[in-house]
Image 1 (tube, each protein chain N blue to C red):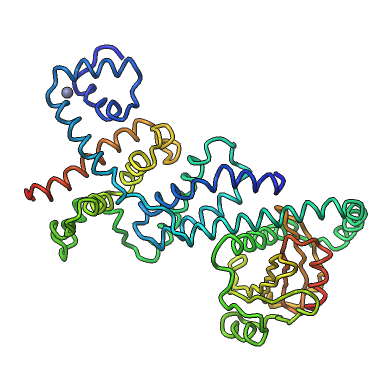
Image 2: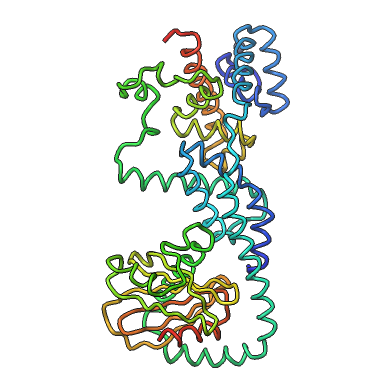
Amino acid sequence: MAQEEKNSIFAIKIVPHLDAAYNLARGLARNEQDAEDIVQDAFIRAYSYLDSFSGKDGKTWLLAIVRNTFYSWRERKQVRQKVEVSDRTLDDLFISDSSRTPEAVFESKDTQEEVHKALNSLPVEFRETLILWEIESMSYKEIASITGVPMGTVMSRLARGREMLRTLLNNRWKGNV
Amino acid sequence: MSKMQSQDIHALLHPYFDGELAYSDSILFEEHLENCPDCSLALAEQQELRMLMEGPGLRYPAPAKLRHNIYSSYARNQQSSRILIHWNWKIYGIAASIAIALLGFWIVLAPGSPSAESSEAREIVSGHLRSLMATHLFDVASTDQHTVKPWFTGRVDFSPVVKDLSDRGFQLLGGRLDYIAGRPAAALVYQYRKHTINVFEWNTGVVNPQGEEKSTMKGFNLVAEWIGPIKVWIVSDLNTEELDILANALR
Ligand SMILES: [Zn+2]
């Protein structure tokens, strides 16, 4: 691909999805600075792999790269830290972290903040599926393509992820912990 | 999908709610819904949850700094490629004859392991690209070689070649620590007529008799040379002749 052509494809098809890329990275990394680094890195990868882009659906293509970038970033981080919160199950989050009672997880009174915290506490595969569906408005098919699982798995992850979210929020709001 | 177990039909609740069901399944689920208060309640609860997730609290626009970095790196590429195309046309005639000359040059000087060479060149190009795309162009930003050079002391195991070549149009902008093929390398950044040049240098530990190497990759030109045991790669979207001027000046 000639560089001129490459640049214009990049500008027209990829760069406009920057907000979506950041949103996903932020939801996955759960941290502002890491999300910036991941997006920065993902755009470099996207630019260097642009030859493999079919020209169709830049958003799906870019978000798959953002996701891959996140996973390789997390792998490097895990090597350093050995323990990664997002790999624990939901129950572990509440039981193993003795300094934080379930109430403390949702200490904020702000509803949005509570929903945000609940979402952040979901295991990564449910988190990414919910973000892609509810926030990025991707279809089941697109989510399947980004996350590399069958559509049936996307469907069951959405159902399970929503159930976990509702349980977390209900426990908080109805006080029946 | 004909007769469904109620267990199966309940699996349709979420895709129904999401509008992801085929028409026939959708009809099937609606029929079920009329006779199943559990599903009606579940749908209402899902609606409630969706409303909670609709607020701005879960949506983050990209920070201005990140947006600026991505946009400006793209704009820089755009601009340089236009200049590159312009140059390509201008020097087309000369280029053909140079290409033939270079071919001879390559045959004489091509090293024993071309794949290792080209993977090195690839690393250089991606290092260059990385520096253009990311915020991380400098660890030390200074036009003064007496500030830039000492910065590398203790960071790399040699004294990098850093020169003030502003009288020849090459403005030193700064330097950073980079990694090429897993080795720490000094990266010096120069600017020549608004084009960014990265000069990567590392200590090979041996004095190598190889001469200058040239290559083009992804629209960037590369010139490599040896200064004693130090391997120097110069990369930019400038043409090879201009990079040669810099290579000679650094020697
Ligand atoms: Zn039902």
